Image (cartoon, helix red, strand yellow):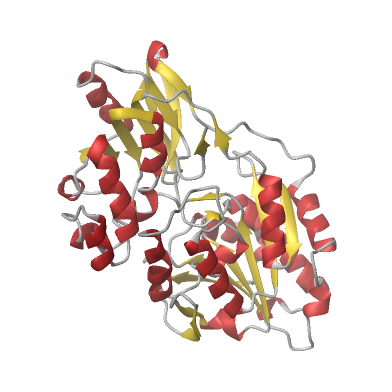
Length: 409
């Protein structure tokens, strides 16, 4: 037997697979950085694309740093240390710096990044706030050409220097994420996020592709309205260690970060698996079913028709979107569009996967809720796998540890 470890919440769980049945563990090859994280980030700050930090500061400057919630916590802390150090050296008092965690996708103020920041002595006395989707005090900045209202966190809007920090990685909505995700959707209103995500219903959205992506185009237009002054886009390896960083204009740094990411997000697989075990990637990716469910798309790609998919997603914050209760019985795309509400785009994809596959969900959700969505609940990963094996003739198995950030080849 081979014990395959996968992320689950803030820990890891394992599933035991017989060696003869294991097709492979689909994960990108690990790349080691050539320099220390501090050196990489300091170099990026020293040679930014566009204005340097000192050129953006005034005598009474207040600074707000929006942080993308899904980024590697260690990489975020290392980036924030160097940014705060640079600001303090430029005579910006620590009490004029605010870090805002962009948790706009979720209702609850939970993020592994918060704990990582609290454990860093270098970030002591820096105010840290968490923006969740019910945060008040928003500022209305108008609407995009597609009609998406742009409302963002008031503290960020009122700061005289607005910085965005985030990881560039594969993204199910934007093609690739970037530092601007810290602002849209990170510190945006639920209304902004809903109208932007609604574009998924009719859009041809493919992870790893940014051309002609309506969600990306709409989000970037919204981000432009927020007035981001400076951004740090970084890339990490499988262990969350910084491989590259780019500072300056949020658009140009994002493009360079995508180039730095290269093919580090790709993983090869044999396909036609009878059983696929996939993790959304642990916290914060599996904080809710709404955020975790799109990992089923990768699992379905690796499985044969009528294969069994096992999704590992803790869902500590529950379903995460009203659509998973209000539209649970809907199956037609036209109905998802007509009755759109937050999360309908994710639920639609779940329903499409369920047409051709059996899905077993390992989570903290009550069984009756899981069953109402057409999935089977399981207590743990091995229980789910044992059940899948016992009810299938074929047992060829593929394991995907990071379903939301891995592109299968």
